Amino acid sequence: MIHTNLKKKFSCIVLVCLLFGIICVWKEMKKGDGYNSLQLQTKEFQALKSLQKQSVGSVSQSVSSSSIQDPFRGKQDLSRLRGPSKTTLENSHLVWNKESSSRNLIPRLQKIWKNYLKMNKYKVSYKGPGPGVKFSAEALSCHLRNQVNVSMVEASDFPFNTSEWEGFLPKENFRTKTGLWGRCAVVSSAGSLKSSQLGQEIDNHDAILRFNAAPTDNFQRDVGTKTTIRLMNSQLVTTERRFLKDSLYNEGILVVWDPSVYHTDIPKWYKNPDYGFFENYKSYRKLHPDQPFYILKPQMPWELWDILQEMAPEEIQPNPPSSGMLGIILMMTLCDQVDIYEFLPSKRKTDLCYYYQKFFDTACTMGAYHPLLYEKNLVKFLNLGTDEDIYLFGKATLRGFRNISC
Ligand SMILES: *[C@@H]1O[C@H](CO)[C@@H](O)[C@H](O)[C@H]1NC(C)=O
Ligand SMILES: *[C@@H]1O[C@H](CO)[C@@H](O)[C@H](O)[C@H]1NC(C)=O
Image 1 (cartoon, rainbow, N blue to C red):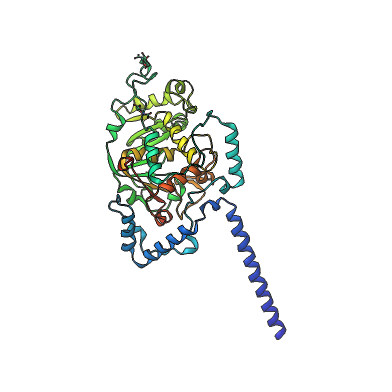
Image 2: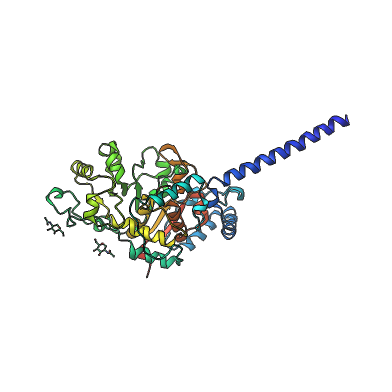
């Protein structure tokens, strides 16, 4: 009797040890998978902890406390989503660390980052200050506003002033077409928007920017219904066969951008674009002459890149910023306040790249070609919202350039 009891006890202990070991190994593996960058500093952890206590205690209190932090915040629909917070601290301390660097990348992405540095496809020769220049949030906002010129190719810009281009560019200026908006939403295409139920909250903005082929049909509950601006890369316009056919593109103002060689002018870029999207642009314009469709000036992405490089703790990929980052800056020039969804990953973070496609790669969050890591650092640094909003809704809030005094 005693003997079998001992045996039972012994096997129980062995089992517990084994389980503990497995958990430890699993945690280590997770760490090596790029999750390091998401580790929160103690300070932020404490902040979140107290926020969560508030939201457990009283939903309305947590909503009003965040609106004090952000005077530009209008009517919010978050209380519905926030509900009685069930989040526990074990899984809630993971929001983006604004000091992330290549050390936080998995070896494969580190290698890609180094290869791009060697390749230097766009002949980047950065001469500015940095890396590692420290800014206050106010100084950084002013720097962005003053250095990054968000403007579109105009009919007077050579060679768009030639007969080949006559009548193709929109007559109305981009700024007069867009007007001035109060609260704007930038909706990333991240896989983590799936099951977010953010649709109503997103639709409750004056203007909504989406990217590339991101649909709303069949995803309304998670991403909303309206599209005010669609920012597309030239690769899509050039190679996506559905571009001229799919009604997805027929809503709102279209903007296409194409990476030029570092700080080159329009005539040189025109002779050597990354993707020769011009013919498809013209075809689309013939099919939809009344829909505004602009071409972003090629200098803008590099003006922004220079600031990303200046701030970053190290050399960044010498490739243009992501469409996501370009869209955020674009909306900051047009709106009082910009709410950005799932650019900084929420608790729904996944390796699923897009909410509308079954394609998995951690590079979509951490960056391979684009200097995504440093873009996210910048957005986290300028965020006026709370860590709780990032964690629960993937939501960051930035102030528009018109509302800052420099
Ligand atoms: C920005 O673009 C506008 C329009 O093309 C131009 O008039 C202005 O000089 C540019 N500003 C800077 C700082 O490059
Ligand atoms: C187009 O612009 C260039 C450079 O500003 C100018 O030299 C040229 O005369 C213009 N062409 C036409 C047809 O207006």
